[in-house]
Image (cartoon, rainbow, N blue to C red; front, side, top):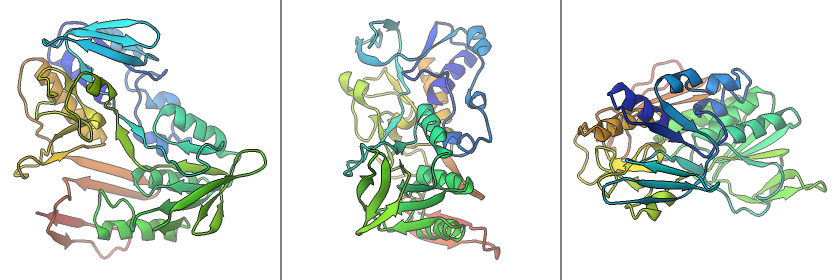
Length: 356
């Protein structure tokens, strides 16, 4: 999302030099949010996930390179350099932008190597999950964040028996307050999803065929034909570290999406930026994982590449479609000291305001 938007914005601003949009996946640039929802449920096709047609890239002189893993990057003080891929190809550049995203965090639970333990981050992950859906009945989802809940709701709507395990005291605790957590839990539990908080997956057990058969929690074995893990992501900082850029929970950038060397751009899930909310405490930083952020920060980076300093001015907002439930968040709730509940009488609706 961030890489596509940066390329598109550069051309819209009149940037003339060649642009190469390069990624390690063997897919055209695609959108991720639908992977855990509409795509998984077969409501949309693979083609619906694709951002732009090949004609668009050709018309705008943007070269899209698929399936190239960049092993190392060499750059000089002026920002120009060369990216070297695992296949031996070299990609010279005058300006480098890292839109490298984040990777699904792996678990070290005993049994995590069994056939049927899956993650959901990429299109290939989603394709593998879809291929298995028709032959499974029982699913255990490990992780009560957005991805885990969205996938759990999707799989439940497809007739699967779903148990969701969250090791913390409540769902989505990093992103929402207690009222919203409880609302989400109660909604999905009433629909038939077995939700267990404070639940630790002690080990994953397999059958004689080497495939997943269950998950042990507090001594109880929960039947599982498939285990889907959604325990967050880790920002991809390998290349940034190799370049000597400052890294802390992502690639540190300023308000103009520029890294510590003053030249390299970093946008999207991989970047850690000053909190854009007005009047935020000095030095407070955030790392967002959302479509809106990827788009808005990429626009800022495009201005920076054109020699203009335009601060990130958008109010962060997020959404999560969870079956029949749609969660919408505007702003950030971190550091709040007052809560106002403005929920209507309708038990299926919730409205909460956070103030600092």
